[in-house]
Image: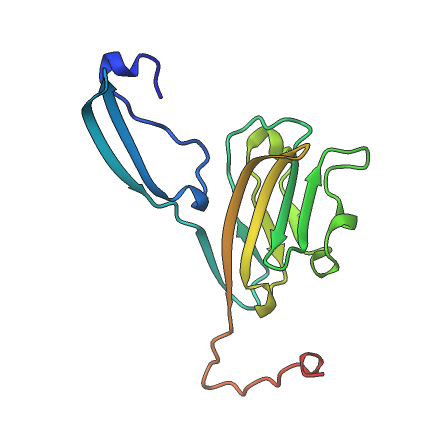
Length: 177
């Protein structure tokens, strides 16, 4: 709330970095000596970002932009719906990306921008997509064990539309075995 809110009559509340978990009903009540002067109910819906791409595209961006100037010790971890580590970013002696902490499924398939803690652009690029990449992705920004920010992105990888003039390609046998 702004300083001097009661004096100015503006009792608006700013919710910083809202997530889908902040969705719900909020009530504001202004009382003086126990007497209710004003009341307002607000319903807040924080929409989860949804990304839809065609199977076979080279890459997709999972967007996450937050306030710049995150602490140098912050750790950024993208996870998938199966709790597999998609990408891990933290400052260290050997650079910032930590592929050894990634699940094997995502190795050499992810990229984040440079200097992301300073800029606040924590977006993740996921490359060489398949239908199995559809689902929920979570990004968490942590310092020590404290959660500072979080974001959820739903990704849908749609199957290719078949041109009626082209023959169907056989499905890879490796998925059937």
